[in-house]
Length: 283
Image (cartoon, rainbow, N blue to C red; front, side, top):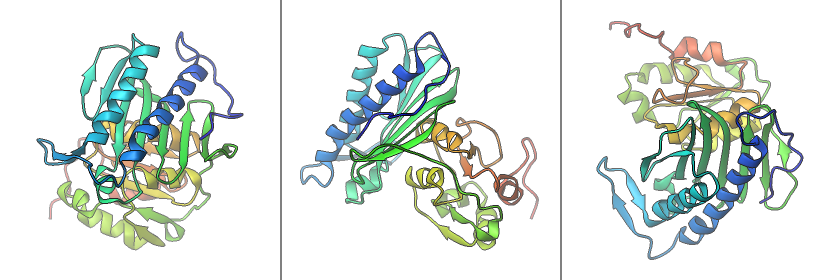
């Protein structure tokens, strides 16, 4: 994988240079790949169930420990929120980490998984890196500096969402029907898929990255944590798209995600969204 290449650096967001934060995040992602990839399809992979019954592997924990160690050494004053080891510190600058997004795929030998690393300032993600080593590809985005991706040692390419302007021409990834059902939005997501040209349930981090590349036009799902979304938001937004909740809130803290190419946001929200504070329509 390459570094940020010719991606321009924005004006300073904090006392630290944003370009240095990006370089650190890319280095941490590369180190994470060295930990996770050898454990992918390993015969001795250790799999356990967490209290919420979701799976966790020895690779999840090892990757997060490696990332936390790197952050502690390079940014000792920053806070960290990680999926496996929770909160550490209380500072305006917070690194948000999902060591292996797509653990269920990882443990079954499906290559759709990756590491997510974000930096949020006052709760707003300003930098995100997503690395999928089984696919040999890495993505990153930083406020004011664009969204980029690289495969192997190739030069980075700048990303741009699609120009699809009608839902009838769009590709939608709804990711998980049970998630929509448990949120009481099954009818809404079915209506969305009927309105779209094509619908898929790709899942985890990959559809958001495909959206940033212009290959998918809408992605939405429920039952998410900030570490599932924080790194993806800057990548999608810097590629020209929108990223918020299914109800249209501009946040990664609401438990759901709706990403679009921007042109389709209002049309999609009219189908799946509910205004803040408004109860669902009665049957």
